[in-house]
Length: 181
Image (cartoon, rainbow, N blue to C red; front, side, top):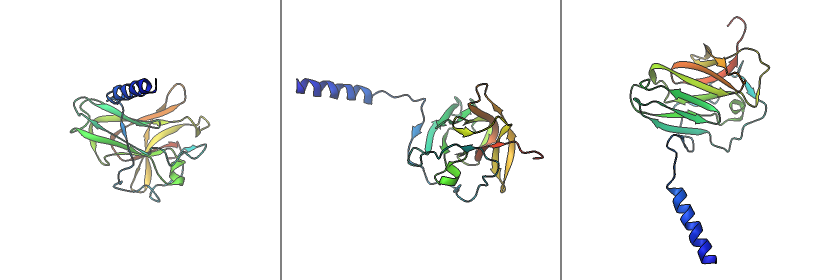
């Protein structure tokens, strides 16, 4: 009986090893970032998680996107949707979440490769579950030249996600719409 169980278990593991879903991003340890988010990004106005996300969990996702087909990459509710033809060439697209405690508490991510320009805008989505948010207006913003640049955006009907479009990859965050700016 023990040999039969071992054989059945080995067969099941062998069968599972051959199964994969190529639509899911490859999750791995963070690659060295071209630019560290630590100490370079202002947290003023950024939405904050109610608790500190686990810093030992996956903080990096990547997937090769075929330019002619488009696709998506997703990590812990952060997502980029790339329409067919938006990329200038086949590209390994990444999402990196901050590894330091201060930024990890904020709704911020690095979408890359940094600086890639799109032929048509792509959609970035940020998770609002577990975020301290009182229903006030929020937007997607890009960190550039030492300040947050508003890109607008919208919250889905369930109030669980914030989305906006962008013409290039960089550091993005979800933030409150501040009066006068």
